[in-house]
Image 1 (cartoon, helix red, strand yellow):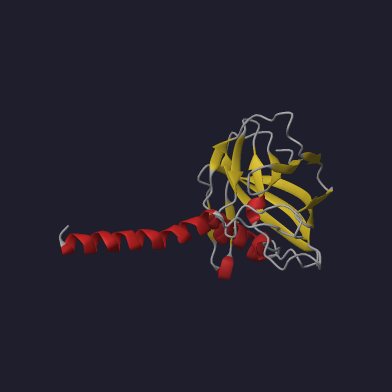
Image 2 (cartoon, one colour):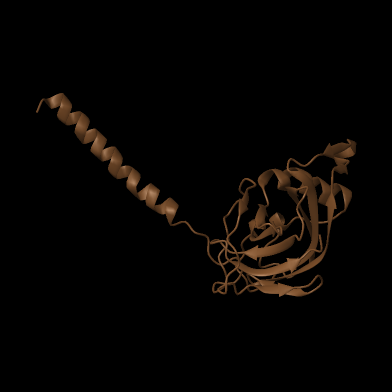
Length: 211
């Protein structure tokens, strides 16, 4: 085998071997324990792009507990209370004294108002807003997203309604936080429920929003 060909083959083999550990670590980088070390797993460390998917039908294996508005919901080492929810065709806010109008891409906004309270002995990690999603009566799910967090939810919470963001909360903070999140759903969506999910999309709790 010519010397130049042998050098090229050896260099290619070395590069391939260097890539193997990196790929393996990425696949195994699941984030565990949103609260205590024995609790649930979180969907991710960062907010991903909004997705709308069709979920499988509920089966006998579905062990999610149903809650009402105002109930204390234990999840991930913390406690959530869903206070109310509303639909909004647009959102008008005035950040930094400049009026801004947001229009939903899918049809209508759903604004969810809730409280969160962590525990001092929990892990000192941030709460991932992807633990909360919406699902309508047709089985379509609506996840939170980077865009909704940085724009609609941020501006409505901080500038219009003086509330906080779940993405800024810690599982270890025992202070009660008054929060909101904005979702973008189909305008025809009915029977909307809020679900608390883990990293495998398993539903652990749900609340009927009355929408």
